Amino acid sequence: MAATPVRRPTAGTGRSTPLGPWGTFLVRRLAGLTVVAVTLVAGTFLMVQLIPGDPARVVAGADATPAHVERARHELGLDRPLVVQFGTYASGLLRGDLGASFQTKEPVAGIIGGRLPFTAEIALFSVLVVLLLAVPIGLAVAARGSRRTDGAFTFVTGTVGATPEYIIGTLLVLGFAIRLGWLPAAGAETVSSMVLPVAALVLPATCVMARIVRREAAHVLAQDYMRTARGRRLPPLRLYTRHALPNLLTATLTLGGLILAGLLGGTVVVESVFAWPGIGQRVIEALLVRDYPVIQGCVLVLGLLAALLNLLVDVVLASLDPRVLAGKGGH
Figure 1 (cartoon, rainbow, N blue to C red):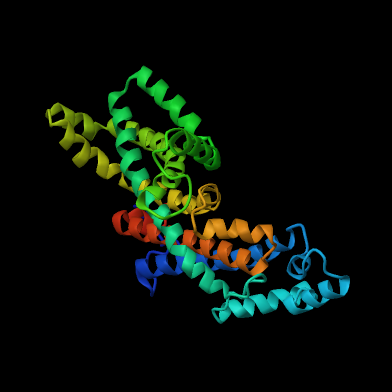
Figure 2: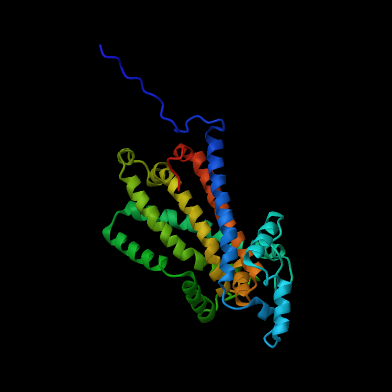
């Protein structure tokens, strides 16, 4: 009788490591976060070098003599080689020092600390509204299964989802602030001041997410276990909340994390449209006067927040779906 060949374990499967599944998962994600952080630091430094204009001329004033401009450039450290400037910038970051504004001499960390709560407020509230709207809308359209409904849904969500936030924001100001006078057009004095900025962020994001939820829901509703559940004549609310929604959870959380990261970027333009006193508006102000440290600090913080949010979503997904923990799923 021929001997049965012995199966040898495949090397590098990663099934058994000293760190365990969670340790390996976190080390892998933290390593990725480190790469993102280093890329952001280098990218933000190089990005500001491409901004047209001379910060020293702005600081010295339009009527300053060449000698005054050179003195300002020396005081700002802009007369040193780029390698030296980057080394100074990076070493400051390692000490937790984001530098000081060229214009006001304020610490960049203090500027960001005063503006970040406003940005976080509209970004977090926006993603909550997106989740509360997009998931039931996408699920309802998939459950209806009507060609006419699908056609209207696809047209509306495709049109609104492709419209930039600043155009939506401008239309909202014209309609609800100027024409109707129902809501403030700018500022952050009252709770109502947040309605239009949040709406400008929410509308396109909701449309994009609802389209994807609808696609995922249509796939879930076509599964055998859903047909079995329908055959048992379960109430619609129980059918969709207990059987369909849990199977959409992974995709929904993944999209929610990505959308929140995108909303942090979208706030840069929306805050400028509505004069919302967040980081985004401060970035635009700094760009106009070539305030390198403020631009670098704000972009770096927004980028790191987006990366941290994606890491948090990965951890939540790994706790809910073992495939993500094993490296076979996730986003």
